[in-house]
Image 1 (cartoon, protein in one colour):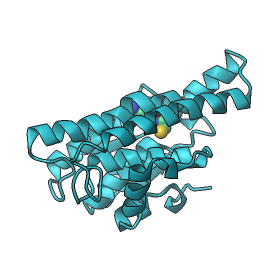
Image 2 (cartoon, helix red, strand yellow):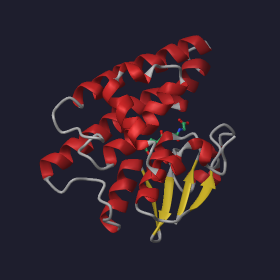
Image 3 (tube, protein in one colour):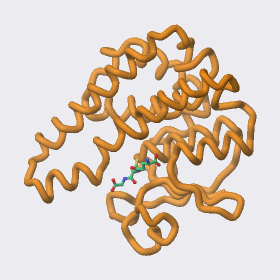
Image 4 (cartoon, protein in one colour):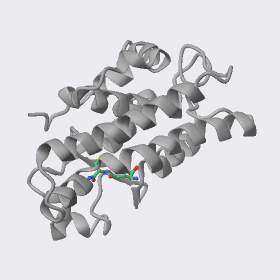
Length: 211
Ligand SMILES: N[C@@H](CCC(=O)N[C@@H](CS)C(=O)NCC(=O)O)C(=O)O
């Protein structure tokens, strides 16, 4: 099993947590976004979208972190990352997708690059853009956590798929200077997750390509 990813990539971070929770060993293949290695032919041959991560597993190349995590959960069921109950599962997938589909893409490196290189925005304007969408996204996520299904983690009292998306997103926001404590449920869940070794080992600073 090979995970083509980047230490700072939050989509790669999600998959690392899943692999760690399921106690799966894998090889890290670093693809340096800063050097634009993800846009080079060697990586595009694996993932024509030129986005990280890609997981090489069972003779296949899997892309899109949510699909990868669902595949891992289907093939290595313990511990489950999604609840069995369909309504509960829909809640967890919805929380994860709100980050994967709505929040994270607006702060992506390619969006920042386009804003600066093609629309002439300076670094402050790009940061303001990223912070705006991060604040809006975290505020919505925090509100959604008040629906009675949240426990020690985003869904109940065991770590699950929603947490795999939340922690990388929250830590990215913190790195961008946002005060995560403004979202008390999120802050509490992130702290709880970071006590779990699977999350700790997946942190960007604990990756072989960290710099
Ligand atoms: N929806 C994709 C997102 C993939 C994605 O945007 N990955 C980022 C790293 S976290 C990336 O490759 N960025 C490169 C770029 O924006 O140029 C997933 O969940 O896997």
